[in-house]
Image 1: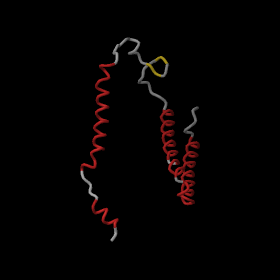
Image 2 (image 1 turned 90 degrees about the vertical axis):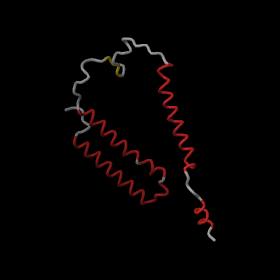
Image 3 (image 1 turned 45 degrees about the horizontal axis):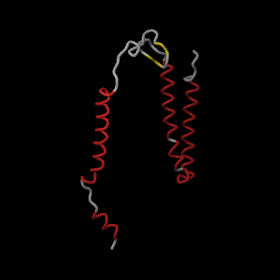
Image 4 (image 1 turned 90 degrees about the horizontal axis):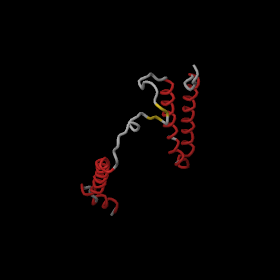
Length: 132
């Protein structure tokens, strides 16, 4: 007689099995709600002119905040996020490189090739050049 089949037939999934997860979610939500709700009452709340003044990275605010900004900043930010996310995909390969073998190595080489093709395209388009 196969014991494995008998074991799977006996096991049941009930709502009680999920009780620890529900308790953890309730405790986490309660802690967040309690912390956010009680913090205005515990801490000092003194509004002075100096505290209400705009402050950005230690530089005094000058001019209008609605002034248009160069698109280069946004382009570099988007490119950073794009390449940063691509680099994250190297981590699973680094963890499992022995199990993946030569097929995994070939896939990573192809990924790196596509990565460098995109980087070369960005360089040729001049997306990283700050001078006009």
